[in-house]
Amino acid sequence: MEAPANHVTPTVFANTIEQKLSLFADRVIVHKRPQSWIEGEQMGAFLSVSKGSEEPPIFLELHYKGSSDSAQPPLVLVGKGITFDSGGISLKPSSGMDAMRADMGGAATVCSAIVTAAALKIPINIIGLAPLCENMPSGKANKPGDVVRAKNGKTIQIDNTDAEGRLILADALCYAHSFKPRAIINAATLTGAMDVALGSAATGVFTNSDWLWERLHKASVVTGDRVWRMPLFQHYTKQVTDSALADLNNVGKYSRSGGACTAAAFLREFVSADHWAHLDIAGVMTNKDEIPYLRKGMSGRPTRTLVEFAAGLASDV
Ligand code: BES
Ligand code: MG
Ligand code: ZN
View (tube, protein in one colour):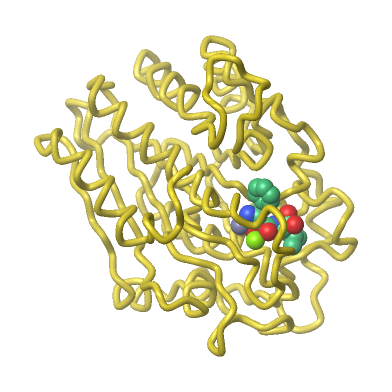
């Protein structure tokens, strides 16, 4: 997360994770899906973001077989992998933009959790998915008002190109369902509004499952890397399904109000699984001096909680 975006491109990210997992080649398979594969999967929302950059996108797919029962339904972890978020045509202000090198924090924490699970031989099956690309302004970039089609056929009006995380996650969440998962958890530095809401005290968890909430919360009490539940009201859904040109709009109708909640409501439109949780980690992305045992800078939170959660699931079978 801390590394400069010119050093950690989507390609370098994928190669780094592949190399770390090469120690566990007996139980982990790594697929680095190229653009041609992403096109074949009809991930139109992800591709619309990646096409604004010169760096090729990668859809990283990790399979960790920890269970002796290879047919055991997997835990699917999905991470936002924007290796740099300039905002695109809806360009961010230059002050503080350097922090957007950490906009791959969702991908980093879920991939790290899988590396750790493999090292600890946690006896469950886990699949990791990370759509990796840059969000850049170019002659090919998304423009406000553009309409794209996600993998599940839903159309999206892109009124703000800076709300790119939900676009790449939409396609990744659709794909996650093809593994008949036990649960889907996604992590994303999704909204500045999450930082406004909770700051660095806790990761915001939006979930349709009381069971998943309880397991995540329990794990976070053990690790100290806290989570806090946030609402998934229809109230917010109405604000993202009201679009002149498409099924959905990528920003809420009252854009500043409840921004973390409208982003979660948007993601929910791509989920049919009974046990899904969205972790908005924008507020815990950096550590200034709040957490004394973490160094200053990009935090890697909540990797510990994800690992503890996975270990907890193992004792559940
Ligand atoms: N990556 C940002 C969110 C972010 C901001 C993470 C600050 C960490 C710190 C995300 O892609 C973004 O730009 N979100 C917009 C959404 C808005 C346009 C609806 C935001 O939060 O301003
Ligand atoms: Mg953005
Ligand atoms: Zn972003």
